[in-house]
Image (cartoon, rainbow, N blue to C red; front, side, top):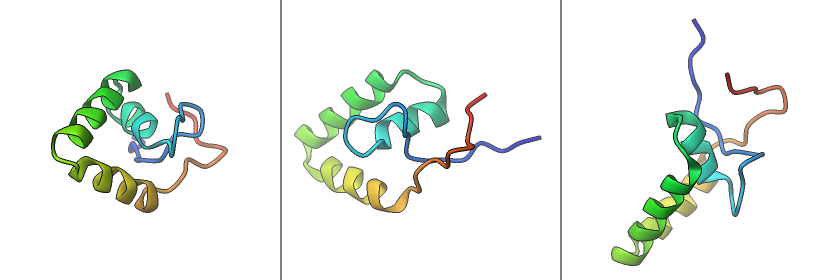
Length: 68
């Protein structure tokens, strides 16, 4: 049984790959994640800080990583 790991996306990347990575992890459309992130950024402003922290903390997906 392989465990899913959270990585920043290298193939579905607009800025840092955080939303693409979250979408791959939760098996969702990345557009939904991006819209949610924009709403958080505009609503409270803390979404921008959370996005930047995730961009620093989350490792980038390795080359051999293939989503099943």
